[in-house]
Amino acid sequence: MAKQLVHMSVNGRRIEKAVEPRMLLVHFLREECQLTGAHIGCETSHCGACTVDVDGQSVKSCTHLAVQCEDSEVLTVEGLAQGAVLHAVQEGFYTQHGLQCGFCTPGMLMRAYRFLQENPNPSEEEVRAGMSGNLCRCTGYQNIVKAVLHAAAKLQQTEKVAA
Ligand code: FES
Ligand code: FES
Image (cartoon, rainbow, N blue to C red; front, side):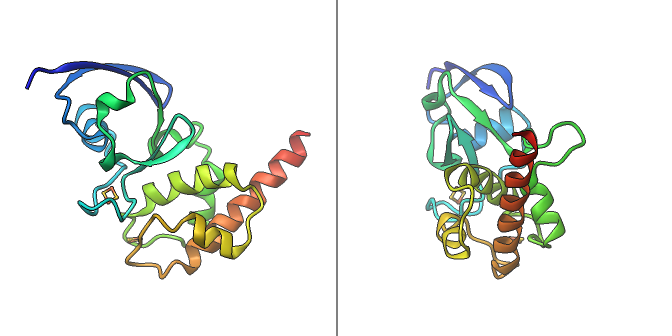
């Protein structure tokens, strides 16, 4: 099939590539942009290991075509840290032991990043519901909930200091 030019900003970098219209966003990120943090854990849109942020929303990149993201702003796990400084969600997962094999982690982090903007002061129940599109086979979720609550507290604190 004829290739189509696609343009998007990925982690603040402008990208232009010719791709087949059937190319999934997750394959575009992993194979064309060498951003291999986003993973593929299913073919049924359930696991969320492929979650990235597109134009301010968490999306499962296995369920989007790259060409549908023309002119979009895409953020992947590789774009979360500012230089050597981890984002609060990364710090939360690290300090609260919210990962083991790490396969679900990039998707979990990207979902947590957006969820905490949707709901900056969530209850445990709200964290569980807000993260329910992301499956993990290792942690039993308990420490992931703690990690997200830790990040929420840290982000609130940072905001207070800035105000
Ligand atoms: S790879 Fe499982 S939801 Fe995308
Ligand atoms: S840490 Fe292994 S799947 Fe979540």
